[in-house]
Length: 108
Image (cartoon, rainbow, N blue to C red; front, side, top):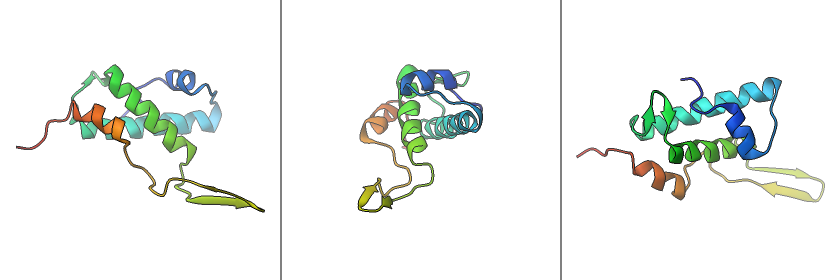
């Protein structure tokens, strides 16, 4: 699936500039997260591959999290300093689920 959101939209949202390999990674993550959102909503909320604005927000926020910790590292340390990350490699946030649930058709 091609990226449902232009990389330039994400760069404006994140106030970051990507080029080269980083831009390729951004496009890949946007595509993966877009596919996951589309699967969760069973395609609802997308028109010709373009997500509704609220689903676009879900894709951007989830992409931001995935880009910050793409390898699922739990912690890093350097000397006396240590940083811990979320233990889950990837989970939807409650607010993202709330948005996506509006589109999801559940089995009956």
